[in-house]
Image (cartoon, rainbow, N blue to C red; front, side, top):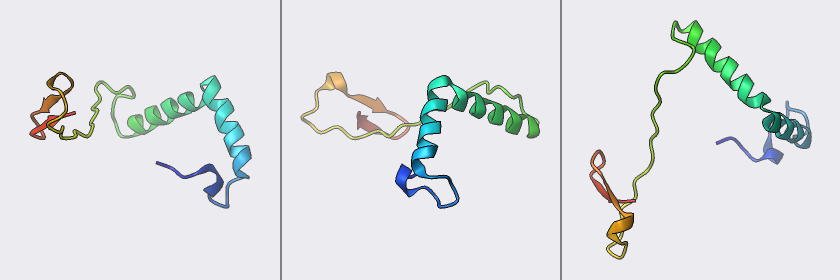
Length: 84
């Protein structure tokens, strides 16, 4: 999950400089382009198609209390949990 900006390692530039670049690059799409190029290079080096063909999203299921209405609850069969 990273760390707080002010707690960055000492071998980086001052935190406010790094944050300024991050904000600017994130706004203009530079971080997305860097991420995509690195992902493609790593996948290509591993002999895989540079573009992923599928993805998996996992989320935590939380048991619902008896006071939670049925309209906002569901059943997670994999975790055998009735809740949200």
